[in-house]
Image (cartoon, rainbow, N blue to C red; front, side):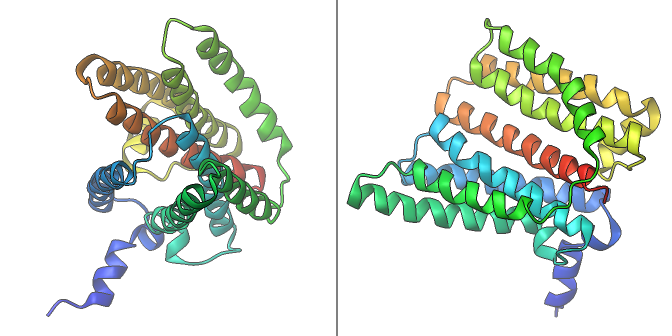
Length: 256
């Protein structure tokens, strides 16, 4: 018989052994399946994939990054605050909040996104307050390197706004990774970026991300006519960039 305990330990193996090709592949498959199922559930709940949903998710993404940083610092120590557990944990909280908010919307005509944003913001604030920020120079460097991308994408009005915002979140992840590795001696943990960065250096991660995200967004718009699904995929891409970028930023600022 299969030992469930051993299976769970292997599933959460990244906490103990780091990211490998095996667990990275498994987590990628789970992400794809979970993302599809969530999309189907949102359709059944008649929740539109629009800016209100994106705004609702944003504070929870930041909250997840803060929780992951506290895990790095040793303030928290659980499989549920490490990949992939933290994605399940944060999703459970945001989905529960969404369901309650939809009930409130139906009974009291309160737009669902307002309580979701309020709760997510509250969780983010109290969690970030537990992080001891020390490295303000790191924040300055991230701001300086991010400025050209923020200005450039916001001014490039020929592209859809959602594409520009998604690109900014992914470049935020690239820049925080670069700054952490280049200036503060951190090491990349994920398998594929680690191979690329190990070969071409930390700075190479920025053009890699830039080309990758622009190409993916172009392909979505070019080859898919399902607007709702397109918006959802873009939201998932933004969440992934925001989650890893915020975790990297918080951990770097607290020097953990």
